[in-house]
Image (tube, rainbow, N blue to C red; front, side, top):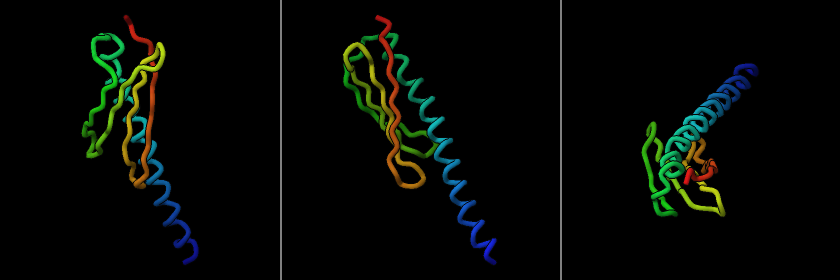
Length: 94
């Protein structure tokens, strides 16, 4: 009984962490894809904020200029009901 009462919470924790890491990878790739037009075209007025739905999760994108760099961030709420954010930076092609 002690082994079962220990293994079930640990297994649940591992499943949640696995899901959190999967979403971080997926959403950082999505942020990279969303950032590319702003880096290559350079015609969009910054700052820009918008939301998209990916895998039943609402992603909030924010693009702004910081000095010579373009900053892109994505924010979402993970399976643990905590807010996560990933930011990427890039130089504009123009």
